[in-house]
Amino acid sequence: MKEVNIMNTFIATMANLPSRHPRRLALVLAQIGLFVTVLSFGISIAGMNIGIFACLVGCVCAGAPLHRLGAVWAYLAYVALLYVSLGYHGMPDNGIAVSSIPLGLIVAQVAFHPDLPGAAVLRRWIMMALVVSVSAAALLALAQYTIGKGGDAPFRLDPAGKRYALSTGFFSIHLTQGAVMGLLFVLVSAIATGWWRTVGQVASAVCVGICGARGAVLGFAAAVAAMVAARGGRFVFIGAGIAVVIIFTAIGLMRLTQPERLDNSLAMRDGRWPIWQTSLQMIADQPFLGTGGSKNFKETYLRAYPQVVKDIPNEFPRGAPHAHNTQLSLSAEYGIPFALAWLIMLFVPLSHLYRGNPEIFRAGLGIVVMVLVFGQFEKLDGAASRVLWTSLGMLLSLRHQPSASPTIS
Image (spheres, rainbow, N blue to C red):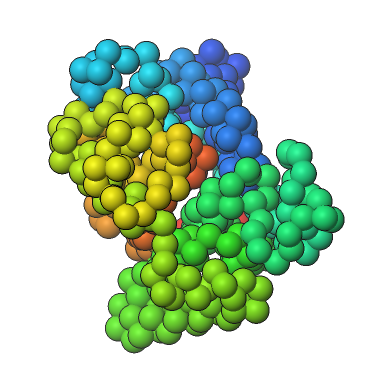
């Protein structure tokens, strides 16, 4: 309740200031920063970083009560535990990038708030930016899928490359494309309306379907099922049926285009098993402070692998980049307390959303389910994490909006 009152005071102050007042101009900067971030969601992590930094500067200069917003204490605990691990390993300078990743969770609550001056115009522009970003990624992904994947950034098109296997859109890795587009399907469902929503949903679903990331398909199916089932009653069975259809459609597509990969998946022949075993041993050796980051993880992995896995050659002669599981990766790199703080930071927004608009809560549930399922097979990278936390921040800003509020079409 205190958070609501403080935010209402800030909103009233902004509304009463002249449009050219420095604090109002700072608020415009924050809103433009969020717009740039959303426009970059499907295209560029560099654009996301620039947008979030501008949004943060704008929020601070506008005097926004960032310290009293939802999930801020969970974020501060996350940062504190990160620096405890890095400080112990003598690497405190390496924490800037990791600590900045969830900033969208905080600043988007201000920039996207529906009661601030300019909010209606901003929401329409952000809706359009999001759908344009997803649609551009889908067109490029389809071209990579049908023409051939390969070549140089940003398009990575090569007629001599492999077709009907993987597509990455504007990203370098198909896993990033799958995670990002699965999350954006949910965000489009929450903030877009009319034909904008339909276009965004179709485009993001196509991106997930042809990215070749099995974990993304499973996460997407689980997220859609959870969002539908959260309506209650018979929707539980409808949600389960939708998940089955999505999964069997993906299996059918793999059978047609990648039969050997499908057979390996069904036979549980996956290189993740030795990676998980080694990572668990690393966590057991340093449960509270981890290895001190991804670089130390690779070096420690090289030493631990031959002691843990004796009958399977190491797939990563220079060390695995991460544990191919989000919770295992975070625990191994920075310690179990840090991984728990990450989970708390994920669930605290959901607890706030549960008490507000049910439509927004279902979207938050879809995002959390998508991340948890995908995260069992891969570590969320910087691009997917930016989309995750900023999307949750945007949903948190809308949680007090009544269900029957006017829509934008």
